[in-house]
Every structure is written in structure tokens, then in C-alpha cells.
Amino acid sequence: MKFKDKIRFVRQNMKKNRMRVFMTILATAIGCAFLILLASVGFGLEKSIISDLTEGRLANEINVYHDKDFNQLNDEDVEILKQIEHVKTVTKRNTLHHEMMFKLEEYESYWPQVYATNFPSEIEAGLELSDGRMPQANDEIIVGYHFNEILTEGNGNEIVYYEEDLIGKTIDLQVIYYDKEEMKQSESFPVKIVGITKQPAPKVKEQFALISEPLLKEIEDFTVEAFLNPEQSNDEDVELNLDKEKTYDDVRIYTNHLENVSGVIEKLNELGYGNYSVTNQLGQINTLFLVIKIGLIFVGTIALLIASIGIFNTMTMSVTERTQDIGIMKAIGAHPSTIKQIFLIESSYIGLIGAFIGTLFAYVISIVINFVTPMIIEALSGNEGATTQDIMLTYIPISLVATSVSISLLVAIFSGWRPAKKATTVDVLKAMRRDI
Image (cartoon, rainbow, N blue to C red; front, top):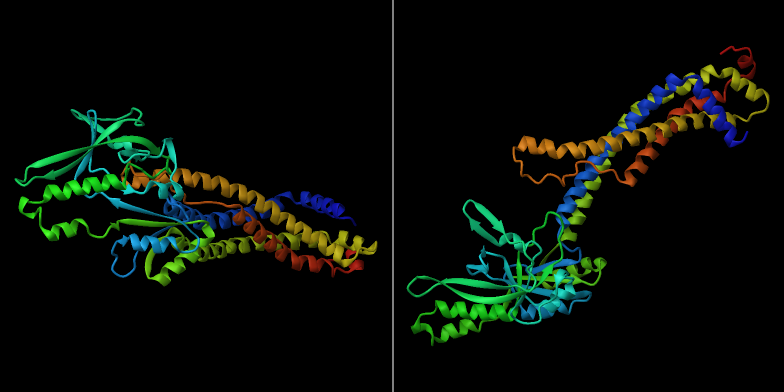
């Protein structure tokens, strides 16, 4: 008997008991859907956490600091880091900690984030622009993609945001200080906006400004001088303080390839540098969620095992009702393995159809859950402005579908094995007399 004949024979017999077969398939579908949905919670939470962790960060980026005392790194440290194998570049930034503001026409921005950096190293690290170009002069700066959102103009109870193009605009960076009589003063440093960074990930706000290191030195020289008393101007200790060693608030390594991150981290540990990379947490999170997903799949499989009772019952009834057909097949020379295959094909057929329907159910329910969950969280928290749209409670990857279908098929075959084996032991003479 050819395989297609076996399939045709199985389908004909299944049609004779449509209701019983339908209920068995339904039970299998529910079990498979439960398995997929339960495991999809683990996949969904893992995807959401990893998405939040990696958003706005590069996978080949490593933050470096002194391991023990957390002191800032200096130029000597930077040179050591550059010599490490597979290091593509090292960026170094300093934060302006002075009270300051940006002023453009009638628009102002108080306490902005301003970082001084080396632009060539930033370019090598992968800094991209959505508009404009990289700075070529000391008084040229780059601003973040959302910088215009911090430039506001007060108008009664309304706040007006700057909406014009920033490229080419000269903006005043005003450094605020208190003079020797404790009167509030400010010094203006005109800078030209020549570039805007590339649009970041959806939940990341880039409202900073990047200035050159020479401009930072100019600002720091002014602020130190502004705080000095006339008697201190010739003080030797003050002069030494002005010439103290250059350090950096933020130092980051960028490797030439993602697979070299772990090797560079090991070398940093050997050299005694503390470090942080998103890949450190990704490995731990993946291991944790692997255990969780295996546990959820195991629990979900229990539902399929319950459904296997229905498959076993259906196949047992099928063997009993088709005893005469089995006897006829044996009488005309059918091999016992052929008879066993027919019933195993039927149980497999039930398992595959149930898995297909269950998968469709799981996808539909998953879409509904992900759509409704943010609204429920927002309603329960009472915060209408809460950022919940990116929450993914369930996620169904192809690997989960393949695993669930495979488990469903194995359970179906296992459930039909005993009845199929029983079919091969039917006595021909008793079967022909319909003596069960």
C-alpha cells in the first residue's frame, strides 16, 4: 500500500466519526495553544527587557573606569586602552558641571547637558548625523536630535518650543557664575550649530550638545579665573591647580567586531580596569530566561499530555470499530507494520491539525493580549502619561512554534502507539466473523 493510499484510507475513516475526531482535535488545539501562550510570556518579557537594555546603546561599546576607587581616567589610561587588541577607538567626554543656559533669540534652555569630546574619535566610534556636518572649528557644535525640545519661550501659561531649522544657527552658551560680591553674572560663548545627531531609538531622548575640547578649556579657564580673588591670582598653588592632570568623566571603548567584546573585557579585568558592557547583562539575562522558558514549556506540555488521553481514547475506539477492516487487510496479505503505520498516521494527523489550529489561536490571543495589556496597566496605574506602548507581554518566535508542534506531534504518536500495536494483534478469523 502506497503512502498516499494510507492517507486516503485514514481520511475516509476520520470522516465516519467527525464529531469524536473534532473534539479530539479541539482538545489538542487547546493544549497546544496553552503551551505556546504560556511559553510566549517568557519570550515576550525577555524581548522587552533586552530591548530596554540595548535601546540607544551599541553592542560593541564598553564603559571603562578605575575598578577600586572609581577615579576618573587620564590620558595615560586612554593610551593604554588604545593599545588593547581589537580596540577600534576610545572616546573620552567631559561634562560641563557649571550652571549654564543656551539662548537663541527669545528661546532659552536652562541646565542643558553639555559634553566636551574629541570629534574624530566620535566619528570613528560610529557617531552619525541626521543633518549637517561634523564640526571643523572650535566654536562649532553638534546637538542631539531632540535638542529643539529644550529650547522654549515662556508666553503666559503657554510654553512655545523652537521649531525652526537649527543648522547654521549661532546660539549663545551662557556660563553663569557669582562674582566676588556674590552677584550673579554670566559670560557668553557664541557657538554655531553645524550638525544634528541621527534619530535615536523611540524611547531615547537626545537633548545634549557636544562641544570641542578647546572650547571646554576656554570655558574652564574663564570660570576658574572668575572665582579667584585678586590675592589668589599669583598664588603658586592655584597655578598648579590650573595645570593639574587632565581627566575624563566618561571613557568608552569600541571594539572592531562584536565577537571581540568578551576578549577585550577579559583584558580590561587583567589590567585592573572596571568596565560595563551591555553584553555582560545580556548573557546573564539570556541564561535566566532560558531556564524560565524551559520551565514554562514543561508546564505547558502537561496540557498536551491531558489532551493525549483523548487521542488515546479516539484511537482505541477506532481500532475497535475497524476490526473487520483490519481482518480483511490481513487476509489479503497486509503486513502488520502497514496496519500499525495507518493508525500512527491517523494519530499524527490529529496531532498536526490540532497543533496548526492551536498555533493560530495562540497568535490571535497573543495579539489581543499585547494590545490590551498597556491599556490595563495605564488604567490600574492611573497615569495616563505612562509609557506602556512598548510593553510586550507575549512574543511567539518561529522556534517556539516549531517546538510546540514537535511536542504535539510526539505526544500524538505516543498516544496512538498502543492502539496501533493492538491493531496488529487482531485475529483474522475473529475479525472476519466480527467477533471482537
